Structure formats: C-alpha cells, structure tokens
Length: 233
Image (cartoon, rainbow, N blue to C red; front, top):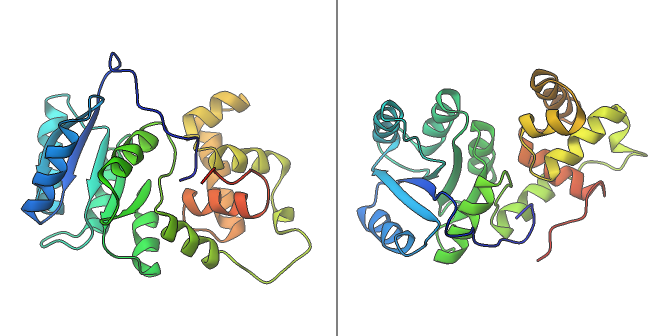
C-alpha cells in the first residue's frame, strides 16, 4: 500500500461510510457483518451490480448521504465494475472506489485503475486488511494488494535511459512526489500555492509525458525511480 502505516481512527471522529457492490449475496452479507464490528466504519448500503449501485448512490445523494468509499466487484451482470467505477467517478468524484475482486490479470487491473479506482484488493484479503484499505483510501492513499503492486511495477519497466524523469519540469517532479504520497489535487494545490485547476493540468501532463494511465501508476513510477521511499512492508 502506498502510504503510511494504518492506524484506526479515533472512535469520536465521524465514521467512514461504505457502499458494498457485489453480485454474490454471501459476500455482501459477510462484509457487512464484519464491518458492523469496526467502530470507525459504517456500511450505508449494498448493491448486486453496477446499475443498482448507481441507483443506490443517486438515492443517497438526494438524502445528502453519499458514502466515502465504494467496495466494487468487477464481474457483475447488467453493468460491470469497470463501467460502474468510471460512471461513479464522473458523477461523484469525491467517492473513493476500491476494487475487491478475484482477478489479477493485468488488463483488468489496468482497466479498473484507468476508470478511476483508488485501490485494488483481492478477495482472499483478510477482513482487517479491507478495513485498513478503506481507511487508507479515505486518507487519500492508494491501497493495492502486494501482488497487484508488483505486477504494476513490472509493467512500468521500460528500456534503460539516462534519466526517465528528464521529460518533467521541476514543478512536475514536485507534483509527482505529492501524488506518490497520496495527495489529492486540492491538497497538491494548497501545498504548492497553485490553483486546483493548475494542479490537475500538472497531473495530466505528468501522465502524458511518462506514458502512464493513472495516478497509481505515477506513484509506483516515483517509487521505482527513487523520488520517494517505498512504503514499509
């Protein structure tokens, strides 16, 4: 996981609200049962597919109760997790989507991250790992299953060159470092004294210049090139 070690939130702080999306009822029920015992996380709804998830979010939005995080399965009827993730991020950019699936194929990982997923976990993860990932995503970090992070790092390997970062300006390097630390555009803007629109432009330029598809890949690239230290194992 790209970010600091996890520590549970103080119980007095507002709970992190979660919507669970999975076409298997047993998975939804099991996840709800576990998260009901976690004091700083609250499940506010569930859905059996991507379309139902959008309907649930629309209702929650009308009530002013949008969740902080969506746990998203990938393979579902009517609307799969990739399409649902892309639509959620287009409509409700403030929601963090964590993919929770059994698929580790690079194409599926890439598609989910390109759609806007914040993190990617496998269904064999321990329940407390999922709670940790929810907290991390809510803090602006990028929770990734170790095997997924390793695959993305391998995918980023390119032929050696003198300085892969040479295409970036000094400001873009600063922005890349902040991306690797899990900072959102608004926070990047605040820390660098620029507008949020300028921060978004820098992020877009970085991805384009480095040939990367997502902020998560940019963060892994920054670790690989030594701009930031890798997270503790």
